[in-house]
Length: 156
Image (cartoon, rainbow, N blue to C red; front, side, top):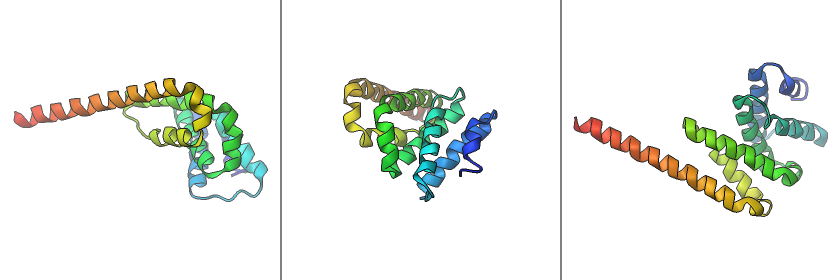
């Protein structure tokens, strides 16, 4: 990870930055064992910076990777805690985009962040709830519209 993945977080190629985030998330979920806490910290800091990348694909994979790191490692959770507002804002922005593109893979990320950072999110809970209700309503509208269209097609 240190030799091959970490350097790609700063690659000029968006694909390589995105893949670096994805590899980190998948490896974390699979139970990678870090040789040192410093290596874990370097990767978690780097993926946190990727939440601000100019490219959507990188931000998306960064959100997924940081979620896995937070779920698995207490030290990452502690490091992210003071900046949870920024992380949740990034995930919320991506959720808004996912609503527009039918991309729902970020739901787990939002759920995990809310579950692990309940106290830290209290100041923005009403805004977050309103946004999630709005997303849920929009999803339900799409489902109803899709069913209506299928019924019209089937009756023709």
